[in-house]
Length: 50
Image (cartoon, rainbow, N blue to C red; front, side, top):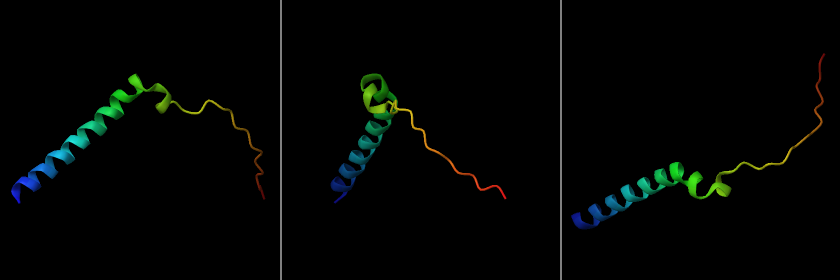
């Protein structure tokens, strides 16, 4: 039972490290995935000033 718990714990830690590494190193290797949309959006706004 302890082997299973340790294996799951190590897998969770490994996934967390991989997620943090992707967050920090992802923009260097996959810039298109992290780029903001480059499209201008204009919408009319109606203000109710009483």
